[in-house]
Structures are given as C-alpha cells and as structure tokens.
Image 1 (cartoon, one colour):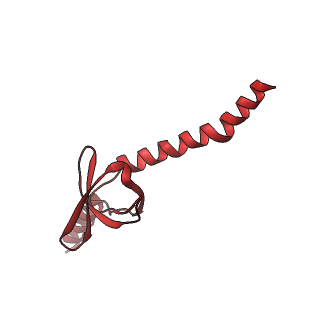
Image 2 (cartoon, rainbow, N blue to C red):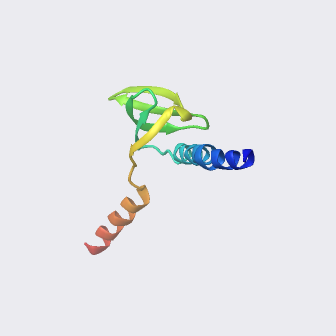
Image 3 (cartoon, rainbow, N blue to C red):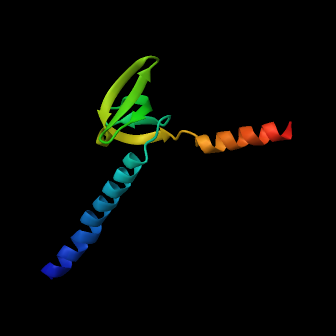
Length: 96
C-alpha cells in the first residue's frame, strides 16, 4: 500500500515538476537577440546580448539591464529568423 502511494506521488507531483523544469531550461537556452521576454519580476524587455549565464535586456530605448538566464520567465515574442529575411531579400533582388 505504501509503495502504491509513492508511485502515485511520483506521477502526480515529481514527474510534472521535472517536465516543467526541462521546458524552462530549454526555453532559456534558446534565447536569442531580438526576443521579447518577461522576467520573473514582471519586467518586459528585448534581448540584445546572450552570454553564457547572463542576458542583456533593453527595457527602454538606450537602457539595458543584465539578468541571469533563469530570471527569464517566458518569451512573449520570438525574433524572426535572420536567415528567412536574407533569403526573401535575395529572392526579391533576383526577381528584379
């Protein structure tokens, strides 16, 4: 009976928490310049520089602050891929 209780606790509490932590780590490792993010403190900003353990956010024009990567709670809007922009620009120049 006790073993069954531990199995239920594992699937109801521990496993979902591990999944959320994995998703957060994946999101933080995928940060790129141009992404609009919200920190755990509720500050909105745009990523300008991504370093090993820190992220530089522009919170107002000309105002940049440095945060630890885990302080980023969520990505509001991903930056568009620069490769897609250059490909579309090249395609337009070929058409002309």
